[in-house]
Structures are given as structure tokens and as C-alpha cells.
Image: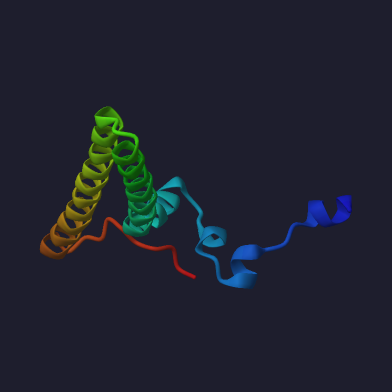
Length: 108
């Protein structure tokens, strides 16, 4: 078992994962930034569900404070997603104007 752990399996080259091809911190940052919309979308989904459940629970128990907290969570989730979406496309626009790529996926 130790021999298997020591030799390691090249997951990046075997399965085509970009994580196995990263060489620097910049490659990892570019990989995360190129997937920022996906990450923000998943967080948005969870916050919308949590805020919706909070609103339903607050309305069912006549608790206006819990209802307001659910509404705040939904509002914050939507505003946060809009900020991430706008920032991503502003970076893409700047890349197009300048001609330099800031967000590049590692070569597979």
C-alpha cells in the first residue's frame, strides 16, 4: 500500500484534469477564475434555497424577523452573483481591448 502511495498516480494526465497540469500558483488562480461563474452559481443556488426556506418558515410561524432574514439572504445572493458576473465580463472585455489574457486555463 505504501508503494502505491509513494509512486502516485498522474491523475491530471490520466483523466485530463487541468489540476494535474498546473505548474504555478498563477495557473491555479486562472483555473479558479475561469470557473468563477460556476462556483458563484452553486453558492447562489444554496443561498436562494436557504433564504426561501427561511421566508417560508418565517411566514408560517408569524415571525417577521425570520421572514426579513430570508429576504435579506436572497437579496444578498442575487447582488453577489450580479457582482461576480459583471466582474467576470469586465475582465473579459479588458482582455479583448488590450489583447492580453488574464484568465487562461492550463494547457491539457
